[in-house]
Length: 374
Image 1: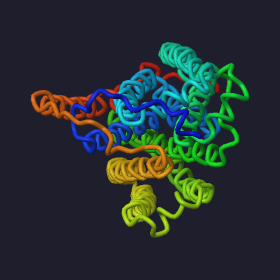
Image 2: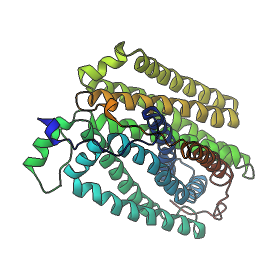
Image 3: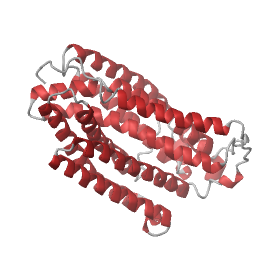
Image 4: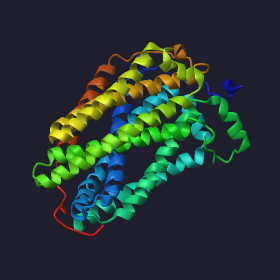
């Protein structure tokens, strides 16, 4: 019986109502996934820029993106700490067990992250001296980050299917297990990956919008590359998203087919928001309206990501319904601490947004005027 393999609920009372943790999990995960998408999508588009046909501009674009990556990766990690903690508070008994089942790949993710981080710093430092250089090191960092994302997807899919734990663990107790037999694994991973490319396109559009000291031709080049990447990746996202939906088990799939008005409504909101963002960016490209495309597209995308984060949480609860009983949590709200925590949390979010506005999109590359063959 899977219930026999699930650790008992943590006896420590929750310091705030259950719904507060659920809300914070959705909000912080949205911030984390946006930062991650900017970072991963930026890497993909920086590497792909060498096929743009204009080597000088592509080299400069590579440098502009590469110098921002050492800031975006720690932002991704830092903003990922909070949702991971909230996940462990609410679903710790499931997440901990799945982490044990895939122990060695999960631990190696930290090693790969460290190597990838050094790689991004190396590329950033090297491109300051020689524009467009370091692409092979950046490719290595990209592959490591892509593997890390796959391991996270593997762990999270396994954490919500306790019925698979016993078979994997007792078949191989070495800790080298993965969850490759899970039918939703690949579509779910591709769903995140294509979203990252789309948001990476927004990164380029934001660079073009706020890099006002650059030449008009270069800004238009960056904006067009970003807009096209956003458009193509968003269109691909529709296909991948429906493939992901098709692989869900019947009970989870029914949530979006009228079984849950909230889940169905959020899915419709996500689809409509993505379509609206796609049309808005297309209009902005036709009118050469940088701010409309970058700011408007980013705002709509943030709403879509938040809606999908809530949907993702509802799907997880549906998977864990036979095993997860939130009504059993003991709650002792710490009213002397909770308001301070929420105030600091909101202040931190505002500060992070100010930092994003002032540094990543406005800092000029020291190698911007250099030219090198890609």
